Length: 289
Image (cartoon, rainbow, N blue to C red; front, side, top):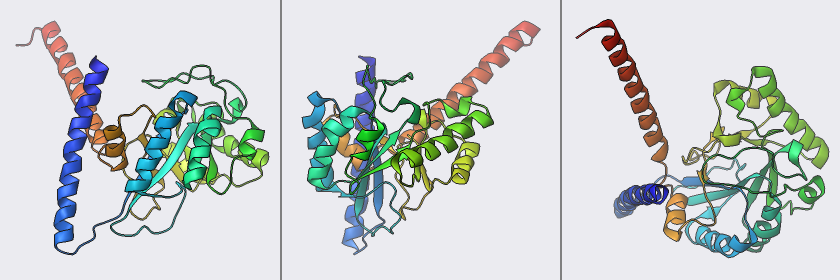
């Protein structure tokens, strides 16, 4: 119940931001201005067969409201145009079986970020939050090689899917560097995109990704991509086929971009409360009034 209530609150607040954006757009058009381009990168995990129809509906909504582009594209975006890129983390078989045919039929580009040491195996890592992959198997090298190269690109999601910020520098570098080298050797193509498992990253990790040869890296912060499509660290919006239609449309429209600010404010409040609590405990223990 609490999870559903939280979801409803987020949708309501995002709807308010969407209406504000709509009003701003109305004013721009009234004075003959087109406004800046908007680009949102969506990310999924698996697409079960039972949710194939819902995913197809979402892609139809995407085509009605945005121009699909590749997540790794570097072309300048046109003012006044809304763009969307589709990505998948982990590389589950269900993506090849249920999502790729839908994407191919509609001509929608997508990037699949894969975990090299689990190719052809069942995922061996823990998922936080609402998403659960169950016992689903990841695509193997042969399956990845058979994906339509005209619309599907492959990126790295590390070797073993760790929380990179919890590793020492040597181990983190190995996950970043070696996953790219292994994928390039296996698929015989250049691998230039990388997504951080669990969205965990810091300045050192970003710098090591640059050194490793990646041209763009992706987080799970629901922020729009930069207008010129050349930003190195790019935010993405988490999407599931089970999202409500309104929920998906709000995410597609960039109306979830306020969430990182809310998360940061919440973190500061927690830290401030913790500091006050520690100070109160110290004061009581020392007899201060």
